[in-house]
Length: 330
Image (tube, rainbow, N blue to C red; front, side):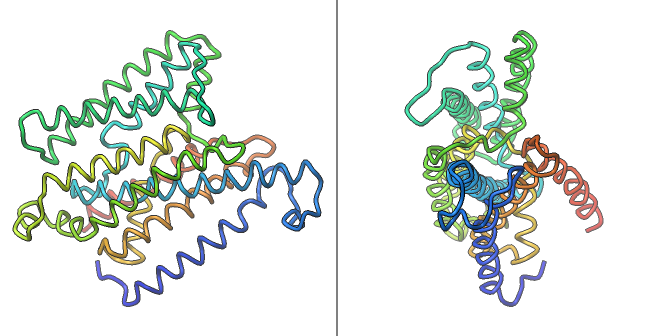
C-alpha cells in the first residue's frame, strides 16, 4: 500500500471531522433538542437531555471508539494478522463473564460513580488478562503464537461459562445479561466519561511512545530484534497497555465488536501503514465512527434505541467479508 503524499493533511482533516462530529452529534437523537439549548434558551427537560445525556454519551462513544480502534491497530501489528481485534485475547469474554456472574448473583456492590456491573466486568477482564499472560509465559518465552492461542482458549472457556450462567439465570437476569452483551452508551452524567478517560489516554500514550517499535514488529520479530528492539519486553508492555484499555472500555460500554478491526484498516487506506501517523489517525477515525454509530442506533427506530453493538456488527460483518476477499485476491 502506497502511503499518501500528505499525511499531515489527512490528520488535519480527521481532526476537523472529529470536532464537527463532537459538536453536532449531541443534537441528534430520538428526542428533538433545539440548537438554542447551548445559549440557555430551552426548557429544563431539553437542557437536561442535552447536557446530562447527549453530551456525555457522545464523549464516551468517542473515547470508546478511539480506544478500541488504536488497540486493534496494536494487536494487528503485534500478531501481524489483519483480522486481529481488541477482543482476540479474551478480555471481552472475561469482562462479559464477570458482568453475567454479578447480574446472576443479584448483589449490589456499587462504588461511588461506578456501577457494580462495571466493577465486576473489569475484574473479569483483569482475571482474563492475568490468565493469558500466565499461560503465554509459562515456558519463559513470550511468543505471539502462544499469546494468541492462550487468548483464544481463555475466550472459549469464558464464553462457555457465560452460556451456562445465562441458562441457569432467571428470565429477568438473562435479559439483562443479553442487553449488556449487546453493548451501548447507557450514560447519564459525566462519571463514565472520567471512568473511561484514564484508560484510553494512558493506553494511547503507551502506543504512541512505541510507534517506532510497532513499525518494526509489523515486519518481523527477528528484524525488530536486529534493530535493537527488546521484543519480549515491548510485547508485554503493549499487551498490558492495550488489554487494560479494552478492559476499561468494556467495563463501561459492554463488548462493542468490529470497531477495533475495521477502523485501523480504514485509517491505513487513508494515511498508510506508518504507525507514527497511523496511531493518531486510528484514534480519530475510531472515535468518529462509534459516535456516528451511536447516533444512528438512537434514531433509526424511534422511540426505541438499538444497542450500538448491533449497528457495529451489522457494518462489521460485510467489512469482514470484504477484507477476506481482498486479502484472497491480493
